[in-house]
Length: 67
Image 1: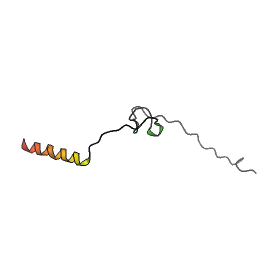
Image 2: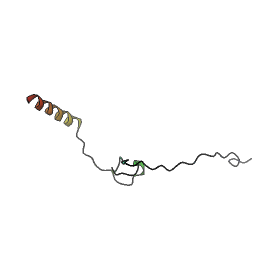
Image 3: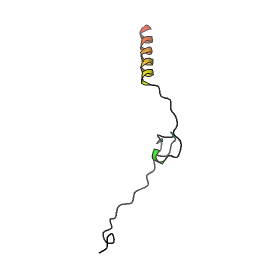
């Protein structure tokens, strides 16, 4: 008996999965593919810092109190 000749395991073949309609890549922000399949460059998204968000919220609350 040789190794691998008779004891081959029959693993089920992996199905090709396509992303559902409306799935957006987290890397390039385009639709139609997963991020691990992405060939595009990462897009820069400006995000306010937590400090800026808190200051903006505090300013809005102060304006509401004055009204």
